[in-house]
Amino acid sequence: MKILFVNTNRFKNNVVPPPVAFMYLSAPLKSVGHNLHFLDLMFVNNPIQKLEQEIIQFNPDIVCYTLRNMDNQDMIDLYNPLPEIKSFIQIAKMHDKISIIGGTAFSTFPKMWLEYTGADYGISGQAEKSLVHLIDGIANKKIDFSY
Ligand code: B12
Image (cartoon, rainbow, N blue to C red; front, top):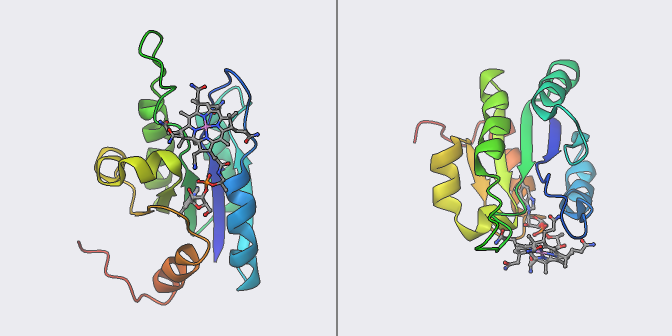
């Protein structure tokens, strides 16, 4: 399948961590033959426009979003990325693409994130093996969408 993998982290304070999750997840997906494309939104000026452009050009079957930070753990100057991340996931839905979310922020509050963003699927915790199984299930229609 064609999979677009999106790094949603745009928090630039402190160190900017490289999107290592994709490095961990790409090898197992490639080893079973998936066609991957990666989009890092960290330094993009207009992330919504860029994401929409990538979805139209690459035309993926599935968009995977990595969600790193819930917040900056700063009660005086709180950073809240939730609305922006939700808007990224809505773009996949607008284009009728299957969306899968994961990452440390997602794993902290998985039920809340799924309900808030409307993503199709989420995997909490490490996903090197489970993401391959989930995508295999989607590809072979072994997963019931009507939940
Ligand atoms: C190392 C680290 C840092 C380092 C990064 C250094 C570097 N060069 O990368 C430093 C110290 C700089 C740092 C900074 C911050 N960090 Co930090 N950090 C971590 C730590 C310990 C490991 C992150 C990591 O690299 N993991 C390795 C990668 C491969 O794992 P992963 O991203 O989780 O990916 C796996 C799964 O999540 C999943 N997955 C990931 N994406 C996807 C996507 C899909 C579709 C699927 C299915 C699965 C999936 O599969 C992957 C492979 O198994 C985590 C805690 C932890 N144990 O995870 C906190 C953590 C991520 N950090 C956190 C926070 C808050 C911050 C800061 C905001 C702190 C601050 N106040 O400044 C900043 C943010 C920096 C930024 N600009 O974004 C929180 C995030 C949760 C939250 N509360 O928002 C965590 C979870 C710590 C915590 N328990 O609170 N951090």
